[in-house]
Length: 502
Image (cartoon, rainbow, N blue to C red; front, side, top):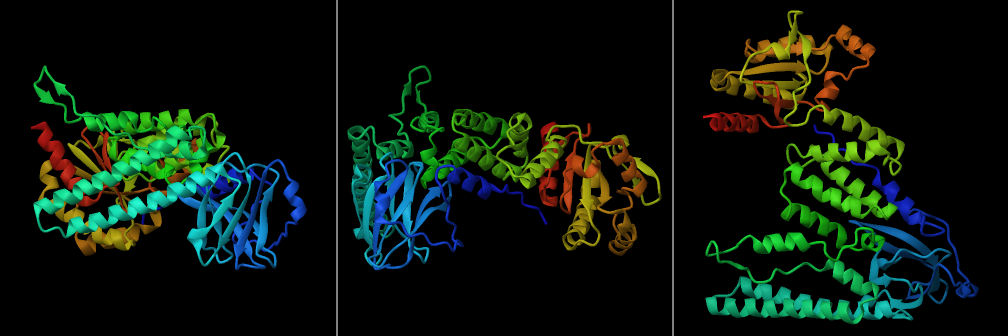
């Protein structure tokens, strides 16, 4: 079973949040603080009065988005009149926040900008009818939310009509109506940006905005229209209005998904294409310790468990260019060890690298050097004869080897995970009648001790062997051309490599 590495980013979140305020209240907190009216004289920090009917003598929470998460920032105890106050001696980082009831139900969203002294009046039975007084940012935000909901609902209704349209004429009419609604939404957003250029709302809408490519230019030299132009234009301008050092963007629901969209649809999945993109984002975020830590952790978690083979090269880049240069202060001890161990391990088995040496002992007691095996391909198979999945996969591998791979000059260097499994290995080979042309090896206790005494990485580190089974495919020069693949993916890769050589 594949281990899934995820850094303890929750710690980073709350460290970052805690640095902005004088207290953090978690969902399990039991302390109750009643803020008196005298506290309203506070000038610095945040001072947000709230009336939340009918929640008398109940707790209310102030929370915000944090990337893809939602975190509680502050709390207050409502009195007999359902009144309370979110108060602290430090300003909150701007962004999109929301009020949460004692039952942890989100009531409504609001903006927190530079002015953090205002009043909220709301009713849990009529969530949409809340009022915020003394906050121009929220006047704009509430109006935007209303228009956005109305236009969004209209577009959804039109989309449903389009699904059931019975004629080309009706479909064309509906599509035009959808286009008009989208244009109206874009115009409304742009008006807010232009007319309220210094507001938080304008900054957030600008960052959320996606570029629209102009008409496709005609190339008079080729007498063709450049069909790739819209894609290239959007890619080149995708982050024009995004300030990666602006910590307020973390406290929105769109910033993190926007990065994911860009990496998924506008960046080729090859690691050499991904690395310059995340390098740019991290460099742009350097002015903000919080934003830099967030992005570094996000990319680390994404590429330490990559979606595609070879993308762990991106993690190796992060390891060598960031973590090894001292950027481990954002990690707790456990996460730091995970990063360092995985980083050094993955450095040794990148695609295109010469595979680490294997000089293990076979079932007859003879040491077999993988480098001495002469073949077009070498399959390194790390497995456990007591592992249920391995017991299913190895006979399949044997079948393909006998019918196909053996004729294609594929050598199999088999390694069992523990030396005390040797009896189980021999039993399994006999029971399943596995090929006698494979190299069945294991690491003896003496070999293990010698490696440790010499201070060298063992073969498990060299091949990042953290589960069973794991398969590596090497070429004739023992370079890694495939790893962590299924048996059928290996078969496809061998066929592909042979077809290229023809």
